[in-house]
Length: 573
Ligand code: SAT
Ligand code: MN
Image (cartoon, rainbow, N blue to C red):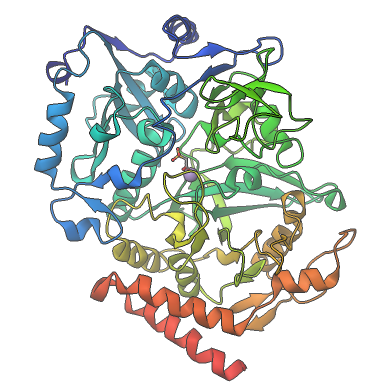
């Protein structure tokens, strides 16, 4: 790769504090990052990206399998040879005058049988500084690897950051990722979406485990009973908030512990239960909307040793974004470094997809099992999305197969995390649409097959915090109040609370959800949990269009589920 990229220098990252200080200084001197107010935000820095490079680019992301069928209808495909040739030309000489950093890293705790080693070669010091937060990086990874050559091969160059020369290519058969022309997190922190999800999902199928776009949290009751759940929501739908939730006052004594906020690797343990690890070491979270009400633990987490990307700043070097606590400052510097004023400016001061990169050890609610090499046992799996209508506050699947059906048909309104239009419902199965590294029909089949190995399978649920009334107001207050829903989920998983059977699953009856002290009307809660048969008919009909993409490859049992639910509507009418 040195012969190809022709860097002036090669630097092996060891992950030490000394190295962090040296690289931070170099990055500051080069203008890549700027120190923030070190009294308010010790160890914190700001990075402003190229304005054309602020989110993942799904249209430029490719799965390079030998055949197009292996990548499937939901992925962009490029033949491996074509991709290597095309990107090889771009990488040729790309690091002239620059340094190539060699970044060895582990996804997962050191010594865990579930962990994987990767090595990312990059010409971006911003990537190195972010990777050391997001993954266990440096010498520790080389030790983990030993003399094995089983590691992910990642190559990254920002080039001139031109969208015309931007490609994120995955070669699952070679355990290789080539990323060029971008500096944005999801495109370039190769351990995250590229390895932990796209390549990971491929390896998971081959090796019999699951790589999922899921948070992992532990709920502890006042009696000390701990229950772990994993939950899949599309990007920017509140996974980080849910993973760090502080329960509403009514639930005094209940505690939520974070294991992970974005990715779960799950495998059947010796005990026949599904066990999950968080392969990451930090959080790459969305800043706008984060405040002491929506996520107090995140606010504490990002108060030191954090890299901010594309947020706004105040005159005294503090950070700001839309939805932060307190009054909107009169004067700011916006995410592009331009003066911004509360009265005069019409654009947002922070980019809607501006981010923080923070070490998970900063999180006051970090689970003490977050680094357990065996993972935590999962009792419930939750699928969620952002839906104005149709999907109730919570609904439980009748079976694992039904749960896979829920996941396969998940829909959500689009957000700012990916480039493109915001606010349209798109099918995002398992919240994995942009992250599944192989044919999604085979991915559904893999999920269905897993049940043969899990003797004690988690119960499966769907939630929707975002349902609206006719005037566009949210029906459910969300945030800490979501504890009420989570409690029902935990009690259902432990077989000790009632529910109402509907054609499509169980929902809580009046009295099953603890609503004490909640200042909203019962009618409003009823509206949030209502099943509207006509809306569901339209929903199930719209699944057909999505399922149709997969042709014969779609597992038959999913289409049969869909038709069965459609037929049940008439029986309930
Ligand atoms: O933008 S990232 O892919 O890093 C985060 C996300 O979209 O979930
Ligand atoms: Mn994500």
